Length: 301
Image 1 (tube, rainbow, N blue to C red):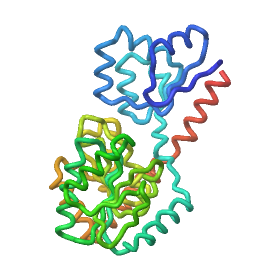
Image 2 (cartoon, one colour; image 1 turned 90 degrees about the horizontal axis):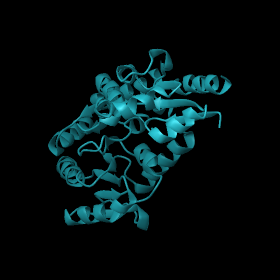
Image 3 (spheres, rainbow, N blue to C red; image 1 turned 30 degrees about the horizontal axis):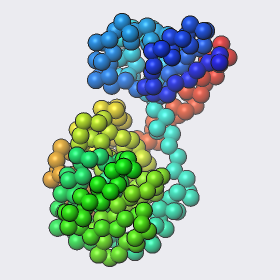
Image 4 (cartoon, helix red, strand yellow; image 1 turned 30 degrees about the vertical axis):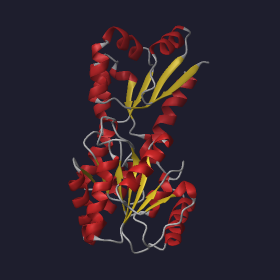
């Protein structure tokens, strides 16, 4: 190949060394670099610096990421701040219609519904404890709990049942009944639809030492978003949403429950958070076009 485009953080020293040695032009697209990852690179400077310097172009997601790359020894002229491709998320009309139809099918049009998306073991108890508090305020509330990995589906079902909640499993085509308290989203590829059918969302991987998952997906549906403190993989995006009032960082199940209950009961607070998230996404679109142009220049050079 004459060119190689690598996404985000998939940097392999041997691959980059051999590609560069063979004259392959290298680009790191949608590049993100947390302070924690930058620290790890610094500890292995003899390996990481040549690897990073072999990159002909870096399309950084943020000014902070660009500054960290430069601090590690990358030439400033090789870096362009383009924003994150994740802001160019487009929710199709079909997906929105599918989500609305699902909520109608459940006959829970007026019930408070929230999603705990991409959650991991170590977070299950906190999510269920928060939902118990939400139910105490509104017994009609529904939690859609979506584990991150398929191998966690049965463990999550066991946790929900052991906690005494009335459970429906999506994988078994169990219908959501008026008495259903938790729907386990134990299927693949439906998380976006669940976000579209809900009112609020917690994004997992953030109450454990994981780094988190994408909070823009629920925000793109106009959902107020909650995350835990361990969200370093999406630090800049989380900061933008938090500063705008679209997202709240919580540290415990009681804090999550209080935030959910507040938004469910305060329409003006809910609407403000919903609109703020949509505005943040709209204001930061355009990374796809910028990164395509950098890729074109790389290929044409």
